[in-house]
Length: 242
Image (cartoon, rainbow, N blue to C red):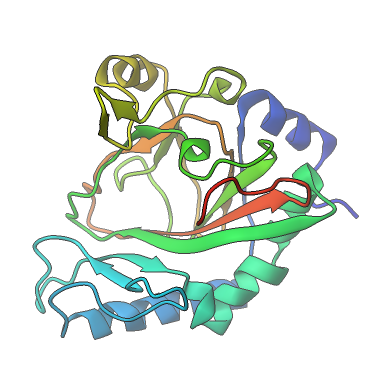
């Protein structure tokens, strides 16, 4: 039985984004929270990037201003390599069935990471399109942002420009310099028409790889933690190394 209704599938391809509740089981969600909380506690004793992924990158990254008293773990690379809970969410949760309904039945994993904005964190994500960072032979690529915490208006939610996946790809190089972001003038226009993607913990925001998006800092007293899984269709071939 499909995980998404025909109306939901139509909405995704029209807007380039779809938020759906109940993307993981309650037990899986509790385990995700438990593992991340444990990593935050471990980070209190660290002063810079630490740990190692299979490909050699540091696994854990800290926000500037991190202290033992006020830990600011902002990213975990490839959590699926070290956590059964995160592997389960990536590989066998309802979220995966939703992705398969959109670009399946053959689906490949490109990469996973956790992006977290702890209370008071200054992390801001400038407007960009994921496809510019992970180009493939076609654009049947979906970023699934699983909400490990409630995502609210105040804690730095994803902001998107619906329909922008059907338009142009905007450069992330300007005057010969890599900025990783759309130019300020275009980004300001996008911001004026942005829609925030909100939902309770356990929801997933499914986002087309060409969709323009960004996010503001967390100005709330609660965390905003996302498991980000990037999936591609079986015939979408990566054009650059991960």
